[in-house]
Amino acid sequence: MKSHIMVVKIKKNIAISESGFVFNPSTGDSFTLNTIGAEILRMLASGKDMDAVSEFIVGTYDVEKSVFERYFLDFISMLRQFQILEEDDER
Image (tube, rainbow, N blue to C red; front, side, top):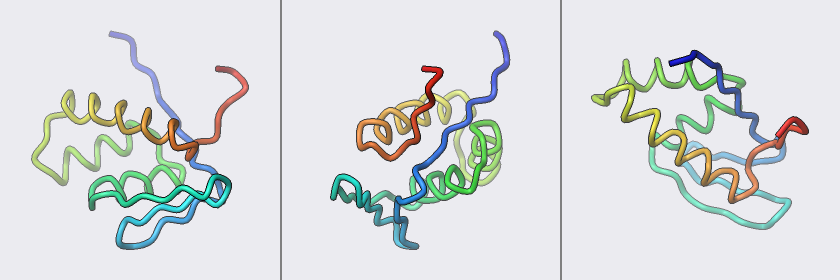
C-alpha cells in the first residue's frame, strides 16, 4: 500500500464555533458537528493533514486507524458536498 499525505483545505470564510456549529456564508448553509467532527474540522482549518489528524484522533479516542480513515474519507465527502473545502485545480 503506497503512502500518501492527504491535505484538505477548508475555505477561509467558514465559521466554526466552539460548540461545533458550522456556517458557510457563501451558501448560507449551516450545520452542527459532534465534538469529534468539530475537532477534526478545526484541525483541518489550521492546516493539519490527514496523517496528523489520524494520529491525534487514534491516540486520543478508542478507534482503530483503519476505521478512522474510512470515516474520515466519508466526512471529507460530506464537507465537499456542503462546499466547505477549497477545491484544487489539480482534481
